Image (tube, rainbow, N blue to C red; front, side, top):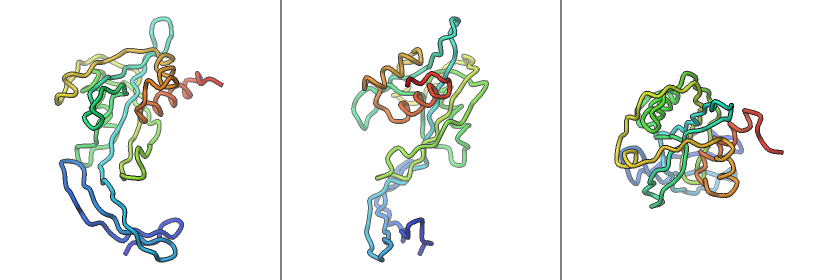
Length: 192
């Protein structure tokens, strides 16, 4: 049995249902503070990273590089910041972020700054997604992997335009919304 967590809930164990390449699906058994036991379906994940690649145009306008790529679970194209799974065991999130930045937009960051960690779907997975801000960008060419990256489109947008797309509901990817709004706030551009 595990030790009581905050509030007295305890994780009693997992029963594995499926093991995929990266994810495991389990039925977790838990005990409530009053002793009642219950089960929840959980996707166990190594987590992921997202990166907001930011540079300033000659006129000083902050700009971001984004990707439009096909996302099979949704069967549609999604506009998002470069991102990827933590599919190399033990790899630090900053290294994963640097790798994804090269793969997806062909840039190397001179500076990589941790913005936040988020829970993308806390009701169904233990995945933690780490978001970075990448600046001092150097073009090194893309190193695509897989059909989604081969066919993705790289977009260069002003940060203001990207945030407006969030507000209009045109950007719906959670890591992208959080990353863009955090960068806008970090630059002191957030609207009041």
